[in-house]
Image (cartoon, rainbow, N blue to C red; front, side, top):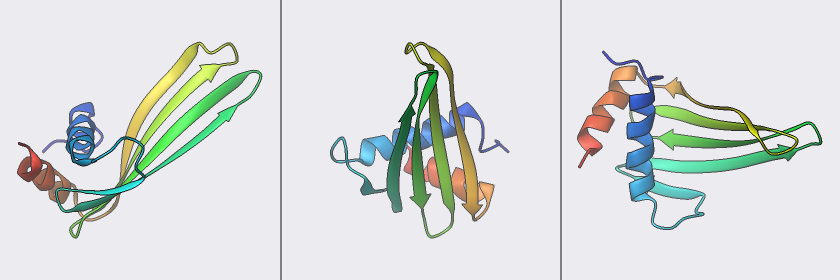
Length: 104
């Protein structure tokens, strides 16, 4: 079984969710039976800055957070970027089944 934290799984979720979003900049929408809610946070200081996007995906069978982090030096040079996923409720297999059923 695939691990949810794999880049492929995260990419599949992002593709499904982004295709379903009717307009750029929305904070709430529905994707293939799952409620989507995104929050964006940022900080900019003299030595470093970061942006984070937290996508909360709620489905009747599961709930996940997909977190994207972008870190920069004070001069704007990128120093670190990462994406990670946290299953809040449900089972890994529930998420993988949803991905398989949602692919076009």
